[in-house]
Image (cartoon, rainbow, N blue to C red; front, side, top):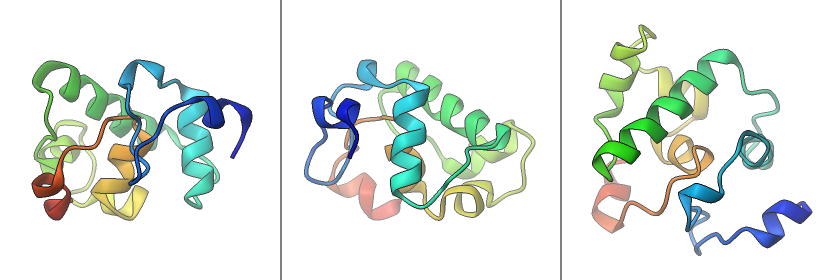
Length: 104
């Protein structure tokens, strides 16, 4: 864990408590910790889209729809991030709650 992560508050499941604390450096650090060494332009499109959706709706989107809107393949999130939950965490979004996590 680097100095920025140490000063940033995560919950027990690894979700960022304050989405406003997120930045691209922190996202890259979280991704690297999860075994994703390089965030590609496709990764960034998904991450920024997730953040935009959260800012508008304060809830997780239908993840397949994100892939459709971004003109990526249907299971883009699972292929890029291994899981929807991992994408949500790297996007620096807060814990979506127990029910939502079961669908991620």
